[in-house]
Length: 221
Image (cartoon, rainbow, N blue to C red; front, top):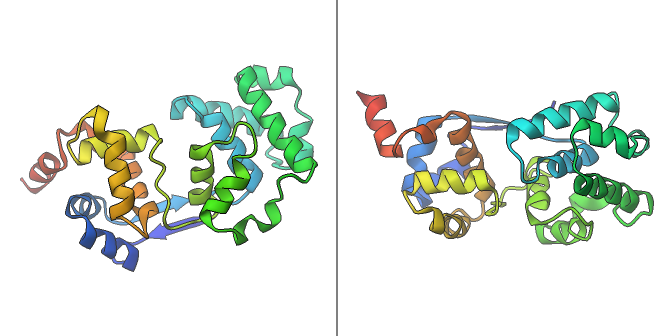
């Protein structure tokens, strides 16, 4: 399983800490981060489609059942053999079944060619992927980060990132998306690294604290 190891002493992380003092507090608290990449392009996109607008727990359970149904053979030939009834039994909605079938059709008809995606710039990848019904901005940005390992992507429509930004910067729920937009500008050209630290704050349950400062105060006492 491919990993992206992010060390606090890496140049991109040090640059972020210099550009954003608030984020620097979080980075120092968390330290190094290990990211599991999604090397299989088809698997990555289907995983993101499954995860749209549901909790991580529900998405993980459905994704696991999906993987078992195709015996972990992540090829178009394996996935296309799943019937609608099987996918519905796995837990997929009619809409997501249509999205997955549409993705498979695009690949089979050579409308989506995985071979050269890595050669395209970020915006071009988004344009190519979002031509597939069911793949929107969020899905394409998750793909850019976790599959193509791009440095400068911040999915501002990711609800988890919004929650983490609201907590870290002590902003309101109404302003948290705007806060992420500001972060994308401030963190350029390493916005993906900032995203990883916000996600890690959620994974480590740091949002249970009132603020980053209260967390640091408790850690130092």
